[in-house]
Length: 283
Figure 1 (spheres, helix red, strand yellow):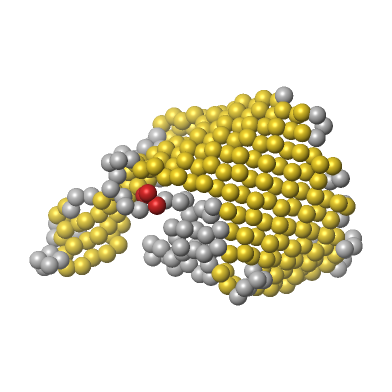
Figure 2 (spheres, rainbow, N blue to C red; figure 1 turned 120 degrees about the vertical axis):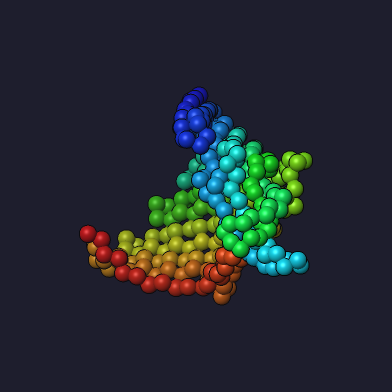
């Protein structure tokens, strides 16, 4: 058995003192079996902009002729977000350069931000006089996460290596009853429920290496980004000791795909198919 204990201790002028401890236990059961577990706690201090920002993002004239401004205000009463993480894993050394890892995890987030509507306020400055209708962040969202990760490694020879993995994630938002944020119950962390990848590299000779990978990312439900599968390939030729030629292709399966959505005035671009050729000089 091997037990590791530690903690990060920090202080800032916003949240004061904070302790972020961790404990890890590793058990080796015979030469091929390994078990481990870990528990950790972390926190995130609100930024100055989250506390004191004021963003006016729209303005129009109301039905009475009074200007109306829509905006977002910081909240100086925000508290640090808190996270508690519990993990457990098992590794099997199959032999012949192969191993399998299985990890399960559970996470609890507390005090995540929600966007709460504010009561309209009449303002005279900056002119002209107007009605301000805004939203303000508050710590009214909790999230529970759970999932599993499975990874495999195989190196049949010293020149050939194959790696693969799968991750499944379940995320459940829990909104405080006092929240009026209609989007909070739909929160999914912009994270896919399923991901997998397969990657291999091979030295054809002492001067030539080729590698390729296939990567799958599931649907981002809230952002409405569809699932995609990406294929990459790379070849490296050592021309001389300092000079190397590299040819790399990315996103080879399709012309372009989305990985993020357009929101809050930020326009997301598509990831195109591409091929890059480069010469690398090492000295």
